[in-house]
Length: 333
Image 1 (cartoon, rainbow, N blue to C red):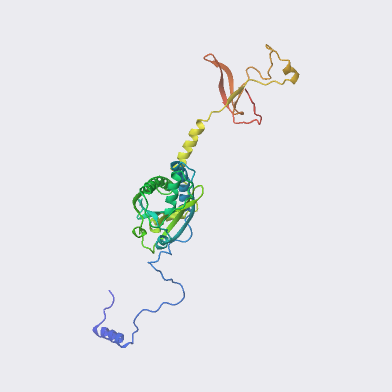
Image 2 (image 1 turned 90 degrees about the vertical axis):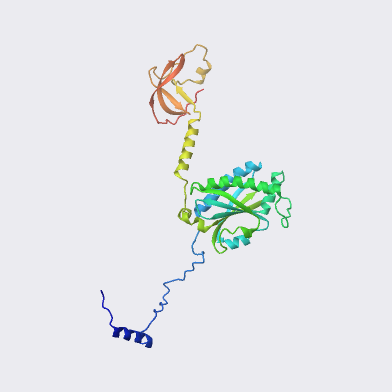
């Protein structure tokens, strides 16, 4: 153990501290700019740059949703991702028009919720198009709530959207995105504090004469567990998805009909000889009768075989397999 101070030494130390002979307090840090202030309440620090994989997910969603909504509405509707930008949740809410239909979605197994915002003009346009209009009519937006017909169309729209949105996320992260509740008042959809960072993805739906938009609002705190995947410059689909496509392509290839022809032999004739041919004439071929027959797949030499018969039908027995292509296509009828 270290030395223990005597009572006289302790009294001298306390006297020095009281009288100011011994300096107290830590030295002020040197102003060499090697440190920066860190604000734990400000989330502007957490993301720099873009999230390419997040954009890829919503571009894939746009392709899937384009087919689904066009089929549901019985009208060709183009769907495209416009932008994916980071902002503060309070700024996003203040930018939303009134009326709008807000939908809080649960994203399991991630923490938190995301927000789907449907502009009132989009809903009125879909109702107009669904009942045979062109979507260009004048809508009085302010001063009224959504009708029963509009609310029912919104529910159907959300069902179709969630199915494609879940599918779009599968190659990156297996999520179960479900609907929690709907609101019209933006004050009741505070999924995160107003100062928190969120990613806002804008999707545009183009009808015949008009284009309207809706937004996904995804809190960064919910996306943080998979931020490395979302920052990747290129995010390929999962091996399971690749194998599914490979199996589907192989199955379709196996079902494609292919023309198979066997060449018995060749002979060169002049035009006069062909014109003088009569029934019963014999054309002498250049090949021997025991020579292998050339078998062509879609006009390309691939196999060799021998002529024969099977159950009373003319047949060819395959002997060899060759991948040589002789550059000349034989057309047989």
